[in-house]
Image (tube, rainbow, N blue to C red; front, side):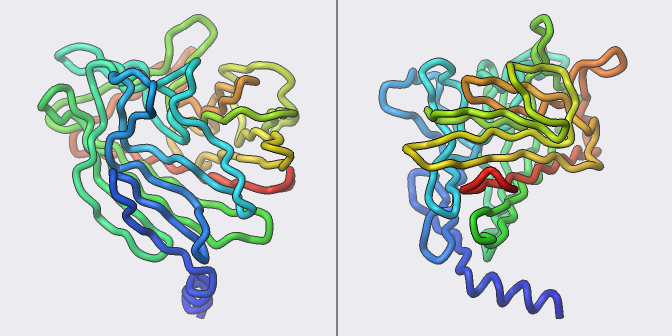
Length: 282
């Protein structure tokens, strides 16, 4: 009975995926933009050629149509909407950087599912012609609830052939790398977490969730990221920036843990719930 009610709700709200071409797959709700998954390589006019990339989410819209995220910002051309990556990816052959897309890049492999609220794709992490990681991305969207909407991103990562070690930034006092959101220009920025307001830039402090609220062209909007409570390493440390960045750091940096090694045949599953709202209430 509950499944039938859910399916009827989906039909009423009209959640639908559409291939827009140029590697862009759009989700709409009742014909209005919800989000876009960029399966193919994207490059903004004026951005350096070596910043061309794929396999991320941009844009994301609130129910009222506010687009909160940014892509190819001039201060960090490698930031890309809602994305995931690590500054250090190590194999026996050496280190590369999928955060900055140096020596390694994600590439779309195939579409697994595209129906109703769900898009699922398989990607690969490639160093040259060699695929070292199989990445599966599944996006499950829910119908909007008045002034907010929520979708879940499930990442499954598996090393191919040999172990692959992931590390965040080793800059002093930092450990960014993981699941992140970069925000567009805005006014009245407020960062907060499950533990309360965040008045200044913050690193290495664990929270159950974190969010950014701001005003875009006179319209208030909020985006919150909530990692799965049962995921490896949760609750995560965060990288929170007043300039417009919210990132759940995995594996983070503690005295006990500073890296995570993917093993062949042992997939790592990470899940993140993303809620956008036209108010500060989520």
